[in-house]
Each structure stands twice: as C-alpha cells, then as structure tokens.
Image 1 (cartoon, rainbow, N blue to C red):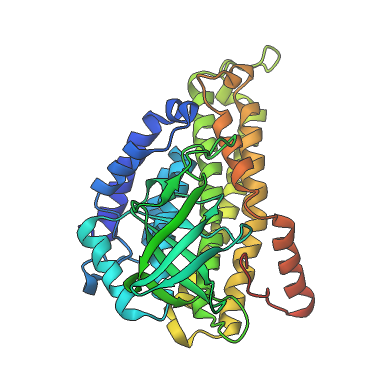
Image 2: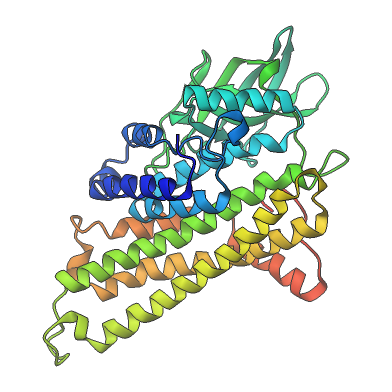
Length: 393
C-alpha cells in the first residue's frame, strides 16, 4: 500500500519508464492496455485516493496529479484511463448513500478494483427497472473510457417507473455487460474509450448511491464536483502531452537532428532558430502548467468544503478550470505540431512515433468544444456570472 507522496511519485516514475519504452509499438497496435493496467494495479497506486480510515492510501489530489504527469508524458492514452480511474472512484464520495460509498471503497482496497465510467451525457440515458434486490440496468454508452478494463463502472440511470435519476455502480464483469472493443480513433488509442452495452444487468441496493442531478431541486454544489474533476484532469492531460512532445523533440535535436546547410553551425543545438523555438514552446507549456495548478488549487479547496460548499466557491473553481482549458488546449496542439519543426523531416517517420503526441492532443482536445469554455470565462469577465452547472461545466 502506497501512503506517502514520495512513494507515489517513485512508483509512477517506474511505471512511466516502462510505458515510455513501449509507447510507439503500443500506440501502433492500439489494443486495450490490459497488461499496462495490470502493472498499474500491482504498483500500489490504485487506492491512493481512498481515505486511510477505509484502508486506502489517504493521499490528496495534488499528489495523485503530480504522480500522473510522467505517465501522461509517456503515453497520454494510458494517462487518460488511469486518471479516470481516480476520478470515477473519487466521485463516489459526492453521493448521499454513505454506507454504500464506504463499502465500495473497502472493496476497492481489498479487491484491487480498477474503475471505469459509462456516463457520456450526450448518449441516451441508461434505464433502471426496479427488482426486489435493487434494479436491472439496460442501455448503451458509446464513449466509456476505461470500462473495458474495469472491475467496477460508475454510471447513472433513470428509473422507468418514476423518472428519478440515480447514481449507480455496475460490476463490469456481470452477465449482460458487453464491451464492444470498438475504440478506433486516431489518438488516445490506449484509453479504452469504446462503447459498452448493458442488458438487464443486476444492480443491487448496495450499489445504488442516490439521486444524480446537475440542476433543479436536487442540485447541490458539492455533488456536482465530478464534472469539474473530469475537466481538471483533461487540463493535466493536455499539459502532459505538451511536456512529452517537448522532451522527445529536445532529445531528438540533441542526438539526431542535423544542422541545416546554411545555418552556419555544426550542431543542431547551436542553431538559433531551434534554441529560440524550443525556448518559446517551453515557456508556453510552463505557463499552461501554472494555470492548471492554479485551477487545481481552487478545485481542491472546493472539494475540501464538502457539503458546505457554496455556489460562489464552486463557480470560481469552474471559471479557473475553464480558463485553463482554453490555454492548455491551444498549448497541446501548438507544441505537438511545432515540435516537428525542431526535429526535421526524418521525425515524420513511423519509427520516431512523434505523430502520436499530435494525434493524442487533437483527439483529446475535442472532448467538449473549447469555444464554450472561452465563452464561460468571457461571461465571468464581463458580468461576473459563473458557468451554469451542467454535464460539462
């Protein structure tokens, strides 16, 4: 069990080294990363965010996000699915059924459960049919990051009898769960973000967490924080992609790039264009990183308030996360594209694998339209209005 920041960072670095050594081949194959997730499970990091009183690591979001960053640099798809394990398991505590939440956390620790999600709000909702023991759930989710790899899946469904929306946990190995293994997008190939179907899958009362609403009478600021957690994690993934592309470009320039014939220098690292460009890209990435950590601090403060969280504190965190989303989106795309110019034409070869950074950035930054995040920041600047809590804000 990992229960200190130093141990968490060391374990993550070891995983990142292992993942980086195989990143180009794994990306080319694009298969769901069962072996890599087994390594993550064995590392001791899996229960890092579970409270110590329930047997977990008792670590905080700052530590977990710092530990994730080298993994994202090595392979953003793996970083994505591991980050979502933490968000999907952490979000349990936002629900009202405390007894069920504590039992699920104990199960996570004792059984080393990996967590995925099936909550894409743009898909049709899952249907919940009451039974004497709880419910059965049916329906399909087309983007279910990590569900294919998971032991447990967080989701929400609507009761067919009353229309009430409930947060639930589904055993991903149950009869009636079908993972379609159909993730074939150009990037984030190791994120296992394909679709999953549920056909009359049993959900016992012990896996029903309570109402699940982002607005209306049942809305609570604290209960809505899972959306901000996902958005915050995307910012860290964007920055990690930029950092990974920069590190690869710098290494390539030092070891492989040849100086241009008319540059007047003997080494590529002496070329003033390369020196200036990598300096500007580094500064841009560091600025995006700083804004992301500012957003992280506000999110952690909001989460620490618990049930006492108010709309203003939640709103300030939402604005900062949205501002970071605007900046990190542009940074990830710009750095992942411009890195090629520091390396030369040979960097476009398949063996170099540099295209994976841009493909990952292009795929991930479309998660939800960043122009709407810019609009939220603009509204706050103009009128002081906070983003309206929703499935994406």
